[in-house]
Image (cartoon, rainbow, N blue to C red; front, side, top):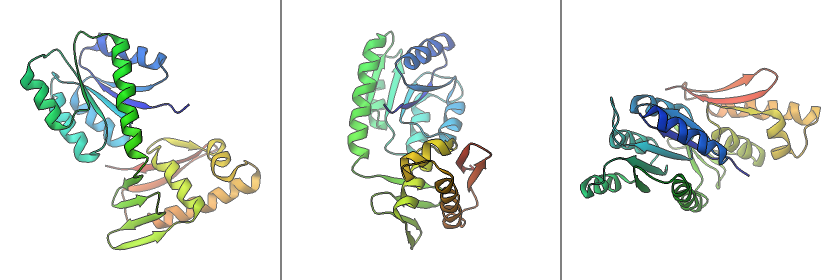
Length: 228
C-alpha cells in the first residue's frame, strides 16, 4: 500500500503533534511545521500528496500559504483547519481552491474520512494526466517526453520509468533495492550497472538546468535534487 505524504502546517504545537501522531498511526507520512514560512520552504523541497493548513498562523496565514503552494502546484489537494466558522472565511478558502474546510474542534475520524475522500478525487484526476514540472523541464510520463521550451527528447521505457520514480521522490533518496525490482524486475549486479548507465543518460538530458542534479547517495541509491 502506498504511503501518502502530508504537509501539516499548524501553529498550535500540541494540536499539531497530536494530529501528526494520529495520522502516522493511520499509515500516512506527515511533515509538521509551525508556521507558513516553514511550510512553503518545505513544499519547495518535498513532494507531498496533500496539504493540511491552519488558517490563523503568525508570519504567514494559511490562505496566503495556500496561494503560494498553488502557484507551484495548482493540482495539490488542500484542506483548511480553522477555528473560524464565519461564512465569508469559508468562501475565501474555497475561492482559493480548497478541497475541504474543517472547523475546530473536530473529530479525528472525521478528518481521516475527509482526507481519504480528497485523496481519492486527487488520484482519479492525476491518473489521467501524469505530467511533472522538473525545474525548467516538463516531463510527460504518458507520452515519454522530456521537454525544454521547443525541444523534446523521447525517452525509452526504462528511462521513462526511472525518471518518474525520481520525480515521485524529489529531494529524497531512491534506493537501488527498490528501483531495480520495480523497473528491471531483478536486482543482480548487471542490472545495477545498467541503472548507473540510465542515471548518466538522465543527467545528460537534464544538464541545461543548473538547478537540477541527480545525486549519487553512496551505497544506497540516487536522489533528484531541485535547488531553489
